[in-house]
Structures are given as structure tokens and as C-alpha cells.
Length: 282
Image (tube, rainbow, N blue to C red; front, top):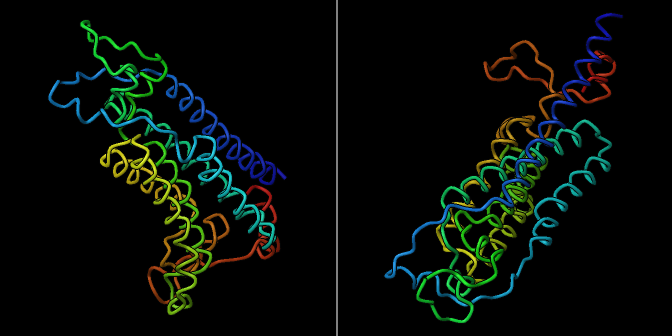
């Protein structure tokens, strides 16, 4: 009974730690969102880079949140309900929220430390189109502060971390990079669809004159990096036989033939039959 209680306590503490980590990341992210960026000196000869016209966002911040966070979460929960796999659904949501949290914090830290002006910064700073003798900005203070957070692109990193994660998740579930998935192009198309959507979303930041191309490229790399990093924290590599299952649903077993085949999969029902305590702690 003492071992059973210890297992249950360990499972509860692990879950609380996971939730706590995400709450801390969210709090840091929100704090950084309202932190002013480094005021970089803009030389006369480079001002032309920041004189692009102001325009409305093709993809608003609210829509970005829906596309990059809500839709992936809904898809994960739908697939988990369809497959009646609570363990996979829980692990995937934990991985997704970790991806979004880490990406948001790192992206904002870089934005604040670099302080690169946006392509439309001139019109944010001087809405009348005239630079006063003092050269001080006379525009809306909030727009000016936001105008110095161009590098890297937050829309790009957020889109590629959320949609990039769901792309990896679908590729694993469809076994796109294993023998049973080879020669089935429709599976690859489904897995790549979120990445194509992320690319289209990121490119709107260039056509909206909100970011320079370098901002979009670096934002994309940051988003993809955290998507892959956090996916691998919870799931095996896509070329592994059991990449569709989270680590906690795979039981260590003795080596079978190949030195790398030391993980054998089991379903939640099989885990219950063998280790009911472990199942409750997942």
C-alpha cells in the first residue's frame, strides 16, 4: 500500500509541476509583452528601411492565437476522444503548451534586447510625415513602443511552433516516415498542411509591412526549433516504430534483436492489466 500511495503521489506531483511550469512561462510571457524594447539608434542613411506605409494586420493577434494554439489543441483533443486515448491526449496538450510557452518567452526576450524598428516605424514615430527639430517621436506612445519590436517576428514564431508541433504530431500518428507510410503521399500532404498554413501566415507579416524578411526567417527558425524540441520531449523520433505513442505509454523491455529496439509499446488497457498503479499515475 505504501508503494501504491507513493506512485500516486509522484504522479500527482509530476502533473502539478507540469502545470506550474506553464503558469510561470505564461506569467513571464505576459510581463515581457508589456516591457519596452531597447531604443536603438536609427542613422539617417538607414531611415529608408522604416518608411514603409502603415497597414492593417491581415492576421490579427486574436486570430493568430486561434490558429496557432486553439486549433491545434482542439485537433489533439478530438483525435484523443476519437481513439479513446486519454494518455496521449494529455501528453500532447502538455507538449503543445510547453512549446507555446517557451517560444513566447524566448521570442519576447530577443525582441526586447534587440529593439529593431519595424518597416513602418517612421509613420508610427512621425504620423505627420515631418521630423521635428528635436527628432523626438510625436506619435502614439504605445505604437512607438510596439514599433521597436520587429526582430524576430512573433507571428512567425508562434505560427510555426503551434502548427509545426501539430504537423509533427500528425506525421507521427500517420507513420509518414516509416515503412507502412511510404508510398502514401496523402499522409504526407495531411502532415504538411499545418506547416504550409504557418508559412502563409508568416508571409503576411512581410506584405503588411510589419516585419523585415530577416525577422520572419529567424522567427520561423525559433518556432520550428521549439516545436521539435518539445515534441521530442514527449514523443519518440518520427522514424521510430512507435512514434505515434507518447513515452509514458511505452514500457522499457529487454533488447529484442537490434540494440536500438529496447522500447516495446503497450496500450493503456495492457498497462492496466500489468501495472494498474503506473496507469493511475500517468
